[in-house]
Structure formats: C-alpha cells, structure tokens
Image: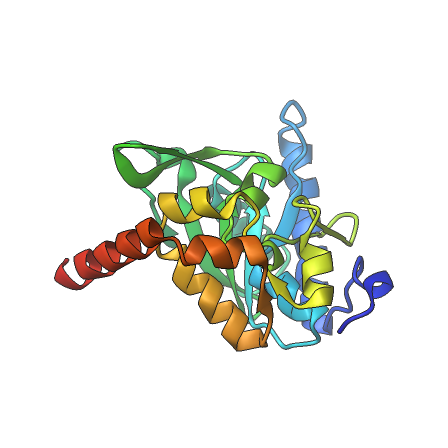
Length: 237
C-alpha cells in the first residue's frame, strides 16, 4: 500500500501541471474582472485523485467549483485560452434539470488536449417520497459526504497543491485497502440502492475489503429488495 506520509501531495504530469497553472490563471482573471465576488477555489475531484495516489494513469479530470456553475467557468476558460493563444474547443453543456436547476449546469470541454468536466460542489437531500435527490450548491464537505465511497471523495486543491480529505477516512482507506461509504451505509443504500453495485465494483477492481458495517448493510433484506426493484425498473425504463 502507499505510505500515508506520501498521500498529501501529488506528482503531476507536465500536461496536468500546465492545466492546473492555466486554471489558476483563469481564477485570477475572473477575480480581476469581478473583484466584488468571492474568489473561486477550484479542486480536482474523485477518481483522478484516487488514481494519482495509487500511481495509476487517469485521463479524465473533473474540476469542482465552489461558487459558479460548471458551464460559466468553462466559458471563462475558453475566453482565457483564446486570449492567450491556445486552441479552443466546443463546450458541451449538461443540465441537471433545465426547469429547476439552471444554476447547476455542468460542462465538458477539451483543455490542452485533455477532456475536462466542470461541475459545482453539490449537496444532495433525499426525501421519503423519491429516490431522486434535491441537488443544490454545497461545500467541499457536502460534496465529499454525498459520494459513494470514501476513496472517491478526495479532492486536489489546485491552489494549495494539497490533497483534501473532508470525510477524514479517504486517505486511510486508500492506504489500508478499505471500501466504505462516507455516511451511514444503510441510509446511503436506502437513498440509492445502486450504490451497492458501486461498492462491489470498486472492491473487486482494486481487490479491497468492504468494511464490516458496509458489508452488513449490503446484506440487509430490505436493501437487497430495494436493489432488485431498482434494477428491474432500470431495465424496463
């Protein structure tokens, strides 16, 4: 396993280093244009951070934004690229819910030849009537705790160049080879039964152990019933 002392900073490729420096430049340009607005903080999220810590190649970069929509930031990035003589790619816009969540528009585009997704930090709230969460802007901690497992809930802050572990368990679980949910697993699987499959998939992919509480929740009859029903609906729909 990776030594814990080496798991707060990352070794970037020259291309990744260039993208981080470019994004810091974009943030500075936005702050110069809009000094009255809070300064943006950008983080690389999720699987890229996990894979870099494991010494694996990762070609998809997800940029998490604290107070701007992904589409708006992508437009600023393209403007910055154009002004500095870089090639500019088309932005693909993805809306969570065009009627209710315009502020949550995410975007995908190519930056210096790498595919980059831009998405704001999010919080999710479930109610008993629906398994579709209400999604709003969130804090880094909100975003980390809404994720499926702790090793996928890590961030890389492009300004401080440090790995951030808001669940307090992601780095240790990556070191120890453990798959667990950030929040109480029974509630996690009740809200979204398909997360059971993600837990199993990542445990198999990395040959990691599923922590005891998470494994017990997976075996609960009501969770197995919910998962069967969810899979059946997905196949029908």
